[in-house]
Image (tube, rainbow, N blue to C red; front, side, top):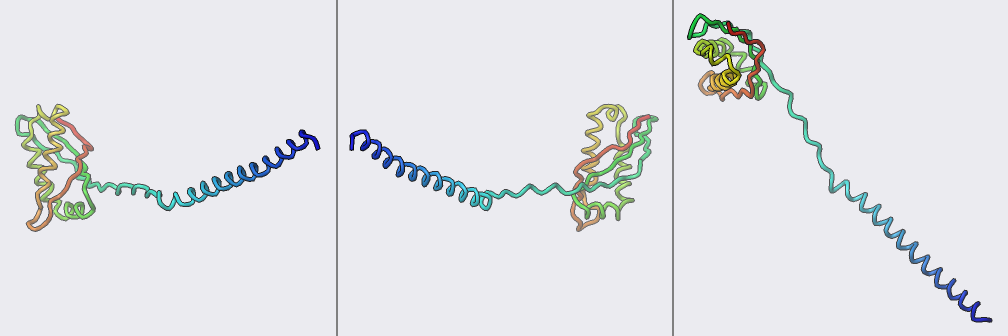
Length: 155
């Protein structure tokens, strides 16, 4: 045998274990990756946020009110956004008192202030403040989230 034949045999004998070792490493890496992917959804499951509850609206009939400062008339329609259905039920049961509170509030308004956007926003806050106290002793306060204008005419 020549030296050349011996070196070829040694090279072949080195390549076989090396290829087996690389194959085993690749299989181990693939197995570990598969195992991590299977474990990840169980631990990293994130709940989707619940959608917000449907809004509760309470539409009031329009109001026509003489303003206190002059011969001005306010024609206003509002819809209330409420916290829950129980508040809507309470307001519905005591609707005459709710309308009375609002009529008194509207009649005290100044037409010059209501002509501006700031005055309308202040009126929204005043409506929330007027409707917040309990309608009957022992009941919780009304939570009015927002006041939406459906009609607003100032003459």
